[in-house]
Image 1 (cartoon, rainbow, N blue to C red):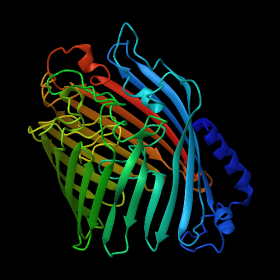
Image 2: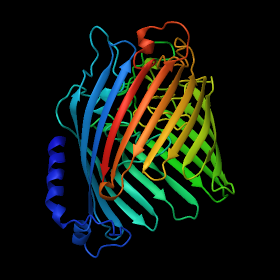
Image 3: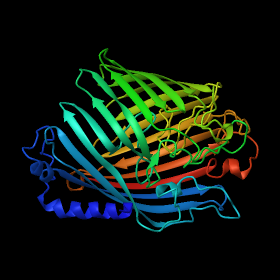
Image 4: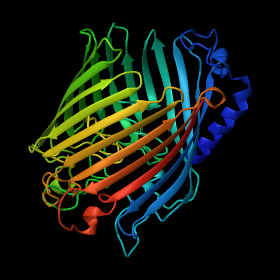
Length: 464
C-alpha cells in the first residue's frame, strides 16, 4: 500500500475512534487495563499544530528568501495492557507560500534554511507532504521502558533538532532504565532514520549526504551520498546523580563500519543563601574513524580512515527563578574535524546556537554568552545570546569542511506560553544576525547564507 494512502487511513481511523477515546490527563498509564478493548478505547489522541514563518535577508537582494509552512499531526497511544502499549503518529506538512527553494541559474547558491521547512528530497513540491513518524510497541514497568519501532529520541548526537516543521525520528529498539536511584541508563540499536526536513525513511548509510556534503580533506567535493555502507548505530548513555550536587553523564556511540564517538560531561550546581545558584560544567568529546570510515574509496568515505578529533567545553553561570546567565567556551583541537551527520541532530556543545553549527570543523575556538529572563506576571521568556566563532581559513580543507569563515552571531528569542483557555499553545520569535569576522572581501560562496545576514523566525505551536 502506498505510504500516503497508509497515512490517510491512520487519520480516518483516528477520527472514527475519537468519540470513544478519553483525552483526559487523569488517565494513568501506570495502571494496566483489564482488557485489550479497554486499552484501545482508553488510549489518548493528541493533535499537534505548527506554523513556521522564516525569512532570510542576505547582503544585497539576490539571495533573500522566505517561506510559510504549516504542519498538522495526530498521535495515538493505547493505555497499557499487561505493561504493553502501542503508539502511532502521522504528520502532514504543507508549503503555504514561499520564494523559490531551488538555486537561481544566475545565482547558483543553495538555500540553506527555508527549503528545510519541507522536504529536501522534493523542495519544490506543492503537495501535502506526509510522514508516519511514530509506530511502536512499548513495554513499561515502574519508571522504565523499552520501545521498539519508530520513535523520537534525544541524545547528544541523535536528537530532534526541532528547528523546522518536524523533528528527526529514528527506528529501532530503545531502552530507558530509571529503576536505580539517581541513575539513568538509556541506549539501544537504531537501523533507520527519518531526518528533519524529510518525509522518507532511510537506512543508516543512506541517511548521510541528504544535507550538503561539503568538501573532502583534499578540497574535492564530498561524494558519500548513497556510498556509505553502514547497517546500524549502537548508543549507550549513563547519567549519575549520586554525588550531589554533581551530575555526570557518559555517552558512547558506535556507527557500524564508520566511526566511534564518546562523550564525558560533568555538571555541578551549588545554591547560595539568596535563593539562587551557581552552575558550571565541563565536557570532553573524542571520536575515531572505524575501518574505512564508511567506504574504501577516499572520495566516497565519510570520515577518512585513521583520523580522529577532540573537543573540550566549559561553562559557568548563575541563575534564580527569573534569571539564567552563562558564559560558554568550546575548543575543537587541530587534530582533525569533528564530524557528526547533520541529518541526525544538532551539536552537543555548550556553545551551540540555533541556525548554525560547528560540526565539520577542527581547530575551532567558540565563545558564547547567554542571558535568559522569565517575566513574573506574564508567561513570557526572553533570551539574548552572543557568540564568537573562530574557524580555520576557508581554504584549509583539512579542517574546514564547509568553507565557513569565522563569524559572530547574535540571537534574540522570545517565547510566550499562555495559560488557561489557551494552554498548550506557544508563540516564539527568533531573530538571528551573523557577521563576518575576517577582514577583506570574500567570494559570494563564502558569504551568501553564511555571513552578513539576518533571519526572522515566527513559530506557533499547539500541543494537546
